[in-house]
Length: 279
Image (cartoon, rainbow, N blue to C red):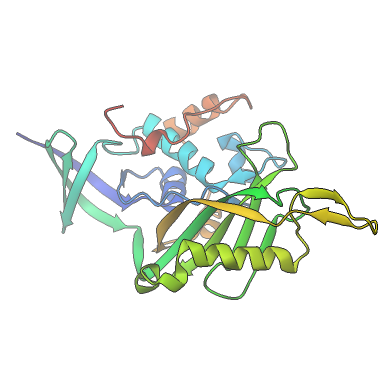
């Protein structure tokens, strides 16, 4: 049996920009090809984020904002079929969804907005490393002009609870599909370049006492690769700054959001829209 639903307008997307657009314009959204932002990527505070529970003193992580918007839009019925879509296809004025249980849902709409479009042959690559020696220093980010390991971001280690001075790192690259399969851009080569960049700014390994001449001794830098994330780059119909220029459409969504985030302690289940539906 095929379920059928009709809409005046549908937005097909999955980026942070599309979620903000649907939130401010009260649009219905099919959350396909989720472009979940990089974990450590931040966004400057804007006064319109206050209604989402943020203040000017907060560090706003894009991934957290993505989760929060997805939660709110689901609560207000702006996301169509959240978390159950296994595959989809669309044509003029029609979208067919196949759910986890192989149920088919047909959606008809007068207007269909393809908000995001993938950029062919462009991928963001994130190589995550645990720093075993050389994790106590003043640096938060290192830059390089190359496409491979063009940034090293140091962040508070989640392995060492309570010690805010200990940092692990992630290396950021922008590669093509062929470069992803090239050994010259593999994790091992990334490790060599990271160590070179760390040494060039004076980062040294764990302290190892004092020499006979009174100099401080240090162990060698030691980093261990944990995993690699590869995310395809994309273009959106509108950027975030353009979306924030528009005044939000007030209504039920506005009132529900105000109640949800009235207290600063409110929290939502992080990654709730990225978990399998059968959990």
